[in-house]
Length: 146
Image 1: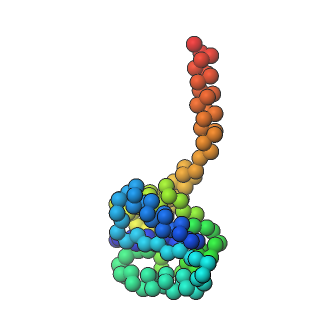
Image 2: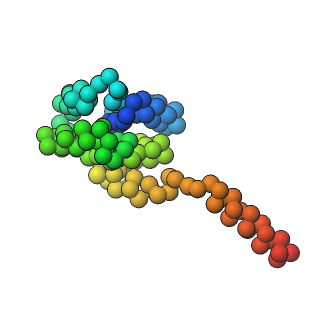
Image 3: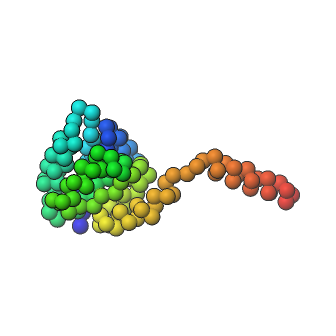
């Protein structure tokens, strides 16, 4: 079964996410984005997302990727869960979005992709200073052994 991925965010984040994913993983089929802008209402966004869902073939799974837990885009997607069956993962970042594209190539279904992204999530954020301190400590240990 194929999976359509719909990125939804505040402003242009979802557009940038999709552009960056395609830069890293190549042109993607069934990957679209929607943003909520100050001049729009959540009802405007809801209608766009509803139309996207209604235009999606019945044999295709849908996975929403949203930016912020409990933000307006998140809440709008949750509201649509009453009328449509789909999967929704929030707190998305570029690393996880690329993993989602790769998972589609592995013929994973939407739920399997969500579970895999949850497992991968903690590894996508790192405190770089600690990495350098760890390298410094290793070098000091090596010098002391000599």
